[in-house]
Image 1 (tube, helix red, strand yellow):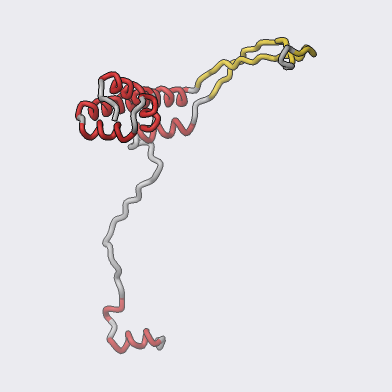
Image 2: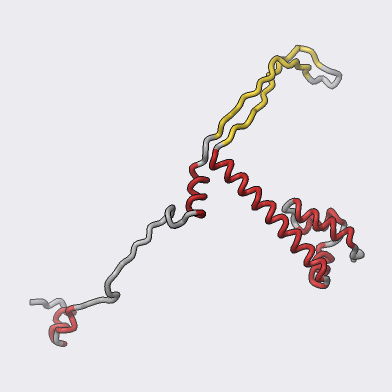
Length: 166
């Protein structure tokens, strides 16, 4: 088992807080076994707390990014696409690859309109009283089954069962 030290703990926490690596990937990156990782987590409260804080930091960072992305989708956005047009010169380099020359560079702005799905998601979650995906139907009255059979005699009921009705 690898020797527990703060340098390894810091490396593990940095990996956890920066991206969603698996435990196996994290252990491989810091040269410890998964078994060691889980032993440290169960036996060392400081390590478990550091891991929890790193996971919380990742969650907070992802939530911030989600909010930014949602705002972008709600408002619409513009991006610049760069395009390069090349032409074959008919010559080849020493590796027998064709040599091309650049004919044109262009930058095109592309507009992405607001996303209806993002708008609906935002409205239903931020203002559910006014924007709901489902309707609520309220029914009133008594719950139960009322039957006219209660007033019939046993003989009349047997006739109904036998299919003999008058």
